[in-house]
Length: 396
Image 1 (cartoon, rainbow, N blue to C red):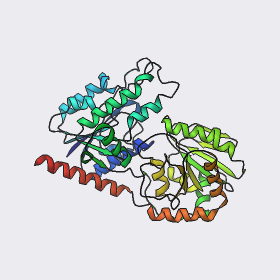
Image 2 (cartoon, rainbow, N blue to C red):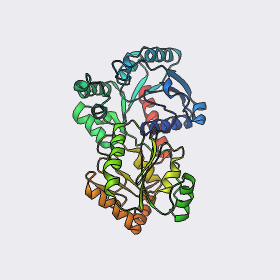
Image 3 (spheres, rainbow, N blue to C red):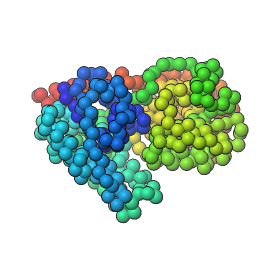
Image 4 (cartoon, rainbow, N blue to C red):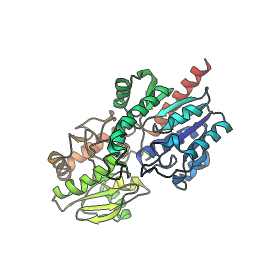
């Protein structure tokens, strides 16, 4: 079975960010199922691939065209002649059973060029019309496009949902949105949540384990480490980093608490009670070094892969309601602490977990029981069943 994966934002073979983790898991799953996988992505991401996974896929790169008036061609990839030419070459060279398109951008050109008997799957990471609205708040976002950005996003996304043969969603909230706002039949969508890129180990947390990884990362042994990680320039993550630096850390006066930050494209620095490590190649090292995590997200949609990371390593965490959206196999109060927003109550939650090791241990034990619910093998099996069903429907 031949499958083409189109990824227009980063590298589909390396789990640096949430979306990349999704496609890294997906491409691992497809190659493990012995499918012939071709990946089309930007030449900007060349060189960052998982070496083992790269050997199993055929990689094709297109050149990102120059931005127009400061606006990235990410939203207008359908007009990128380099993208169109490479896509045309691929589709004429090989017959594909399925094409999976990550993000809506580029889907309409793919629909136009794809052969009639090829099934198109829209791999939705969230509500893109919401993401583009958040992106428009960035001062660098072109002023001329801001008034039209959300409307453009909604119209484009609605067309993609209409023309896709199947919509693969990461959360029930997104499925409901497509049904209610775009009139999409719920039977056209399937829910497949993203697992963490970290292998499940079912490890009991101990002081010796924690100190082992703290020494490796050169982190203080005698402090309570509260961590947050996320890739940049994703706007919701940037907002969370800003909240930690400008609101949360100044509010937490206890000298025994240190906030440790990490992520792709994150700057390295030390400031007051914050240590920013930048990009960490082994995320599990950081997760096992921490006492607990925080997820101070106030915007975004889809599924937060960082929460999947905390769950699979049974790391206690505090989150906003927005931060835990799309993950329904863990329970508030029992498996994690949740607050409406990042306010004084959120700060009280941090102090509560810092002062009460018993609560941290209880959350850890409960998360251990849930840590293998959303694993990579189950993710792989869900996609296999989906493709098996689609092939049967096409043959009939």
